[in-house]
Image (cartoon, rainbow, N blue to C red; front, side, top):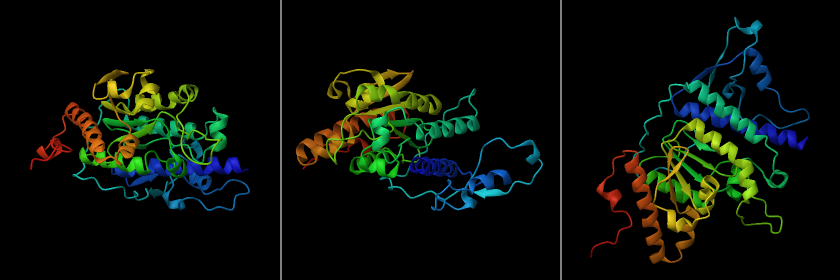
Length: 318
């Protein structure tokens, strides 16, 4: 019963995220059948918990029975978007991908179906036992820019969203400094579940090759559907999962790689920047290196770059 309740709440979270994605693109109302409303109002058998949001905020994109096709469908309001960290510069909406053979509605539905499938995944028993949430991904599914890390940490596992801890705050600042926001890019991980640490009650560990191999089909499907122009691989493990290379991140960072006919930029993981902050001199060098990588990404996407942006983390003239 606990497992059913957990899947139920994860599906509710998935539905909420999907509605938020629609809301961010200006879609305020959705048609919904009376039959679907009745189904959405139910909670799992034996559960005393209340729905994560009110009935008026739920939506269904499923098939409408023939007997209901002529019925009047009420209109459902999409929920308000939760505030994020404000970017340092006004957010720039990247040009949307134009995909003639993939209508936007089909893409929305496929992403939603993929999310549901990932939330119920049980392929790695050790990760299933330890996880609190499956961390699918967040952002604009029509984005030109996608950031990919290695795996969720404790904060991400608890909240069900990638890059929300201290390292995530650094990534949010980087995205904002580029002129984007978390809503105008897409953020995901190679692994959708937090790697378990059975030998200690805290900390994180690197995903195994087998775990990444098992989970990669979900990420590859996300990339195929979103079709970004640039993917930023955050850290050596993410790069290894995507390209299968064991080359060090220091050797490859700042050099575009080809991945699925997409330009892939390797750079340091935000946690590496975070660890370096105890040494201000070293931190300044690493921050500048990451920022040089992001300037290349911005140039590749034809983003406007100000003199102030180009001057970030350069030595100040006395």
